[in-house]
Image 1 (spheres, rainbow, N blue to C red):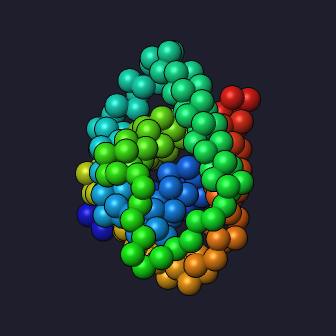
Image 2 (image 1 turned 90 degrees about the horizontal axis):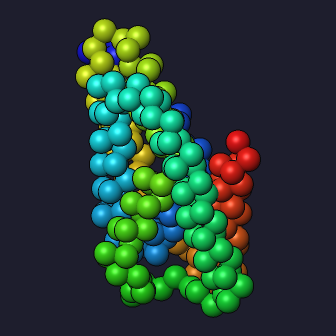
Image 3 (image 1 turned 180 degrees about the vertical axis):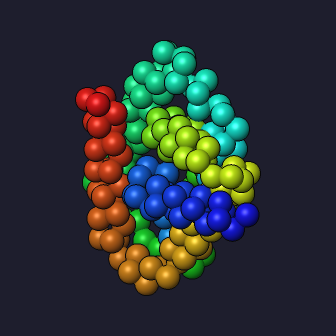
Amino acid sequence: MIASFLPGFFLSLSLILAIGAQNAFVLRQGLRRAHVFWVCLVCALSDAVLIAAGVTGFGRLATALPWFEPLMRYGGAAFLAWYGLRNFISAWRGGEVLEAAHVDRAGLRRTVLTVLALTWLNPHVYLDTLILIGSVSSQYPDRAAFGVGATTASFLFFFAMGYGARLLAPLFVRPRSWQVLDVIIGCTMWAIALKLVVM
């Protein structure tokens, strides 16, 4: 079991470490201490569902549907462009600071819908989980253990990032830090959106 679990764990971790729209959102929520548990849980559970689907062979079905890839690609690009614009506007307005009693203006429902969109409208998540993890898992004797390893990495990563972000809190008591973060997130969103459109 360990011979399949560890490769799944490290493959998933290597794929998820790259900064992307989902990770940037988790980091921001962690810094604001706003709905952190639910954001991390939604991200990890979404990965778990997709990894399970990939390991059980859904990846082959996804590649057989010719309309699936362009729908995810252009829909994801449009959403990321819109979300990036919101971050640029937030950076332009400035004035946000991190306070101990800060209450997020976005309610739980809106926050969960945003993280679901950032997760499920991102074509790369399907490539990483359904196709890549799914295809690599077939090379191991215990595909279930491989999938559990990949899912474990996802849970550990998201909760570590969400709750670990508060270690950066002293830096974000200054409005300028939030403006820089918003610009970085906006650039990340637009870069991913552009890559999706021109790929």
